Structure formats: C-alpha cells, structure tokens
Image 1 (cartoon, rainbow, N blue to C red):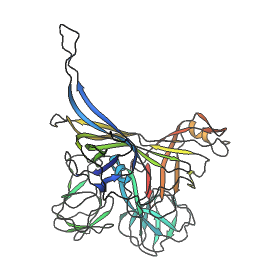
Image 2 (cartoon, rainbow, N blue to C red):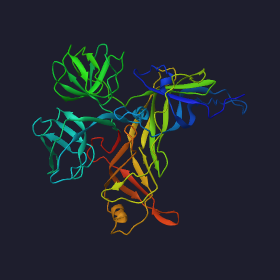
Image 3 (tube, rainbow, N blue to C red):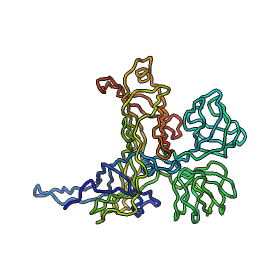
Image 4 (cartoon, rainbow, N blue to C red):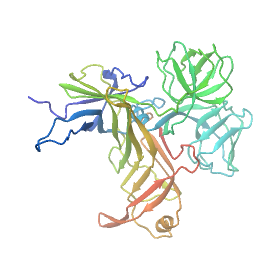
Length: 462
C-alpha cells in the first residue's frame, strides 16, 4: 500500500554552518498543513545533429527543491518564548527582538508616537517605542537600546513633546519579529556556552568592559562565533559575555571584528517525513504571506527553497514530537485602526514580497551553494465596506498618495496574543467588490519603509 498523503511531518532547524545540513530531530517537527514538494531540478537536453529525429539521454545538473506549507499563527504558551513559526520567519528575512514593558504615570502632551526613541531623564537609558501610546495608557512597550530605565524618572520621546514618569522598572513582555536587511555585522569568537543558548535579539553585556550588543543569531552550545550589533562600548578578549534575557554566559575568545561578508538572514535545514521516505534540503530560505480571516485561525504561508540534500527511507517520528501548547486564537475582536479609523472588514493579508533565488556554484556537487533573499516588496490587501469620504477618505488617500499606519491585536491569553503594526500602507489599487450584497473596496497597498530602518512591519508575540 502507498503512503497516505495526509500522514506526513515537516521538520525544520536553523543551520549553523553554510553547506552542512543539520541533523533533524523529533523536536524540530512543525504542525504544518497543505505541505507540497516542489523540486527544482535543472536538466540539460542533448540535441546534437543526427541522421534521425530520435532523442538522446538528458543529464541532470542543478538539484534543489523545497515545500509550500502553512502553519497556524499561534503562541508558544509563554509570553517571553518565541513561537516556533518565528524560526520559519527567520528564513523569510525576519529577525527577533526582545520586547519589554515599562509602567508609566499620566502622559502629558500625548499621545506617544510609535517607533520613536524614549530617553530616561535620570538613567539616560534609551529604547525604541513599538506602538503609539495614548494618553491614559498604563505602560509603554519598547525594545531596549542602551542603559536600563529607573523607577520615578521622567521619560521624553523623540519627535514629540510628550512626557511621563516611570512607575517601575522594565519587565519582560514578549518577542518581536521584524524584517531584516542583509548587511555586515560584528562577530566575536566565544568559548563554551553555559546556560545557553544566547537568544536572537537579546542584549549581551561584557563583564569587564560593560559594553552592550544585540545578538543577531540564536547561538547554541557548540557554536564558536557570536554575531551581534554594537549598542555601546567595545567588548574585550577574555571577558565574560552575559545574555540579558537568557542568562547564558560565555568567555570572549577574541576582540570583535566585522564579518567578512554580508550576513544574510539565517538559513535552515528542512525535511518532510512521509512515512516511507524523507526528502531533505539544506541552506534553505523562504517567502512568506500572513493571512487573517474573520473568526478563523490566522496562518503563515511559506514557500521554502533550498539545496537538495537527499532522500532516505525513513519513518515518522513517534516520540518526543512537540505537543501543541495551545490552539491559535481566532481572528476577531482585533480593534484594527487605519490611522484613527476602524473599518468594517473580513480579511486582511500581508505578503512580504520576498525574492528568493538560488546561488549557483560549480564547486558544489549539486551545482548550488544556497538559497538567498534578494529583495523585499511587501504589500497588504484588505476588503473594507465602503463609506462616505467624510467618514474615511478611501479614494482621496488612494489618489493622493497618502500613507497610514495599520495597527491591530488579538488573543487574550498570555503567551498566545499578537499585535501587528504595519507602519506605512500606501493604497495602490482600489477595485470595487461585494460581500453579503454590500459594496466593498478591494484595497491593495504597498508597505513602505520611509525610515530605512526595517520598521515597516512589527509582529509582537506576548
């Protein structure tokens, strides 16, 4: 009997070394659906001049492949632990940051704008405010940059006259995913990691230099290089590096240096176990689309592509497979704001428009070195009911090149809640549609990044 198509498992792990596939385990299995194999095989057709019309045997050259699949947008069950699909987002050009909350008193001259820099008047600590914070809010959400905020100090905000006073010290809130543009970063060699791994996006501190950096890739035991962005100071050889969120420690084995090459987003090893065979690829990266529909679970839809690693006869994992910590919250009660207007809508989707290409290399037995991300052209679609222009200027925004922020949140349980900010959406298409005999705008908008800071989309899991 053949294998039943529904009975299969997708496993994925971040890859530590280019060209070396990870050994996948039951703990790497995802809860994926609509998983389909997409081979990418180059074949040379021999067609010499001959005395007949007959064909000659062709020859296989480039060997790659991957899968299309989707997974529910679901939390890990712990507010400060990233959900597993954030690792899949890593292959699609996203990076992780550690988010904190800070209790505040009354805001004067508010609101506090999204994506501004907050500075402590006493500590001189700084952070990146994630979302617009209205007068009356009890806390701000931020990514720490330098220093540590103190209780009872006055906060000021860049580009705003708003001020407020802290009512405590920062508390861990959740994990943020946002896009990443390949570039050179800092690297430092390290010894054995204790209490690891170092978490992607957490701050690290030098025990002697007091320098601070932000980890750019999850760094597990056995990894000898730590990649980071400098926040302040300079790490020194021999000092102990400590992770702010993980508590992991390791001794620096060198002074920091620039990476020799541009650091792409993390790559991965992936395989689908079908019960009788397992197909595997390495050095893989992905495209991604996020789909939200009223009163249904939301999904992240991936198109993964990598270098063909091989096929083996292999059964399914039957033990140590991760259990589903909680079901995805359904998409309702989301409080979507477009600027300050809340539309009536049914569906919203975000397509990251990520380009993925294969890097050819004749040194490789497969003719391919890796998949890599080439560009990012994100867009958003939504189907709001039409309204009078005085209620919301849909048409004027479209024809006037007006950009607005989209902000929504949903889920009620800690560790299974999400908030999404799309900072600038510019309507580009506005055909008419219909839903339940009512007229809709079928709005498509390009997502802009006017600040050149990879802050066009923010996804908070908390």
